[in-house]
Length: 190
Figure 1: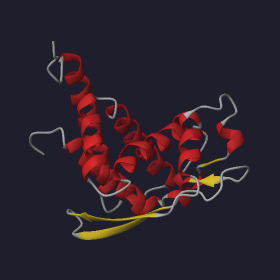
Figure 2 (figure 1 turned 90 degrees about the vertical axis):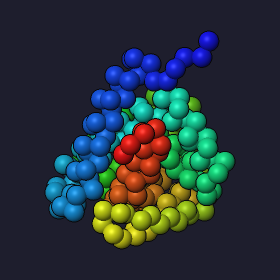
Figure 3 (figure 1 turned 180 degrees about the horizontal axis):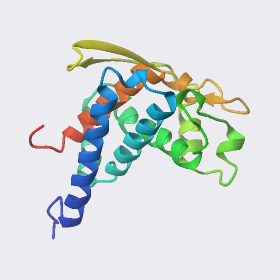
Figure 4 (figure 1 turned 60 degrees about the horizontal axis):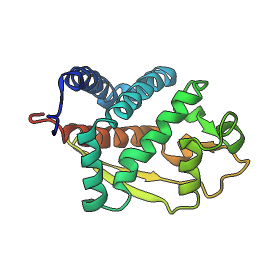
C-alpha cells in the first residue's frame, strides 16, 4: 500500500524545518547580513545548510532532485544535493572553524577516522573537474549574481579551502537560492 506523503511525523518535521529554514533565509538575504561578524554569519550558514541537508532525506524532495538531474542544466542536481552534503559534512565533522573563509580540509584530516566517508568520496569524484559557472536572478534584490564553483585540481596533501570552491558572499546567496528553489518545489503556495 502506498503511504500518503507527508505522513503525520513527516508533517511535524517539515513544518518545523521549513519554518526555521525560511526564518534563516530571510536573515541571510537581508542586505545587512554581510555587515555582521564572520562568526555570526557562519552560525547562520551552518544552520541553514544543516536544515536543508536534513530535508534532503524527505523522499519527494529526492524525486525533485532526480528531475533536476534529468531536465535541468548540467551539474545543477549535483550542486543541489552533493555539494550541500559535502559542505554539511565538513561543518558536522570538523566543527573547529569560526568562519567560511577559514574552513579547509585535506586528505589526512578527512580520513583521520575513516577513509570511505562522503567528504573523501566527493573530493575523489570531483577533483580536476572543470569550473561550473552560474548566474541567478535574485528577485528581492532585483539583480543577477554570478557564481563560480571551482573543484580542486588536486587532492593529496594540499589544503582545500571552502572559499576556493565557492566564495562566501555570492556563493551563500546562490546556495540559499538553490535551497529555496528545491524546497519550494514541495509547497503549494509560497
